[in-house]
Length: 459
Image (cartoon, rainbow, N blue to C red; front, side):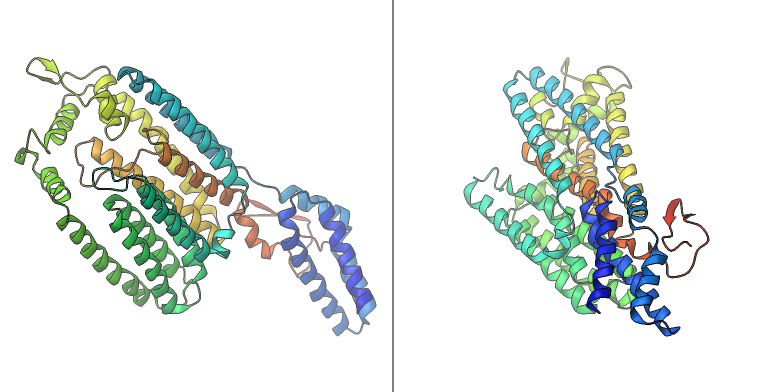
């Protein structure tokens, strides 16, 4: 028995020596070993002794060097350059726009800080790209409570800005991805898994209310519901879909509505903001001023060139300083026309569309959840920001990812994109359980669903 095991191990070692991507070694070794054992058992049932059956099974796999070289060709990290290039384009557009606006507002010192945050963000993206994304599924609770602790720590050491822990709200951008790991770890645990997932969301909801950041609460609540819906519909919890969805949605929606009501009731500013958004004329020169002026700018903007809005004989627009943060798109539309908005949205839409296409190709459950979580967080940020800049500020925008001024947000969004790239790089590796077939094949290569499958037991 020991001798036969040694022969198999030597074969596996030789195969793996030809494969440069070390992360693939364990999975490939396990698959080949299982195949050899299956074939060995089949030969022994036909009357061969164990030694001869082992030798025949190994021989049927083929030359280990050839097998390893062929597997090396198909098992390499798949760097998704389209996402990297689009990310670079968005970053470059953001830097150019911020540089113009900062100099236009006579605040060139802010550009240096913006460049530094961009460099740090690139470093964070590269680091996240090379980290094994599966740790999110292996240690979700540790990561979750680590982020909770970090968020509380930031709340303790940073001052309140307009009654809000401003920097802490950006930490909440990490939580959709953390929920992906939590939901993944709760799979196959039935209704209890759904309930426990909801409890983790409830903890984050409490933190969001303490900050308080209604926009962040909306962002990660939507993420949580979408990820949970996806998992229930895919049968990951092994429950009846309708019952599972009701268990997920009814408590979540009721709790979210109640929490939003409490946040609005305890904050006259938020209630006033909601009313002003519906009817800006309630306070045209106060809280409704920016809503009014934004809508007028949009209504008087041109396709090319500066807008023509005038109040008392002078052109009015959000100041360049405001344009750096919450009203960057409004500012650009007024200064350069709708063409600037169109270009930015085309690039962002290409990024989101391409990421969705790659997400849909993922077969690994954890990989799909993580990629979806990053996509949702990115897209919701864009929607909230665009709505605010078009005169519908129901909720305060967080940031226009990688474009508007926001050093912390830029770094966090870059890290999240790096995590998504890590999924696209190696997410399919975890599903390579069908790479070795136990049935005889007449050809080494087979094309199926646009992929080349190598049959290693070809005679």
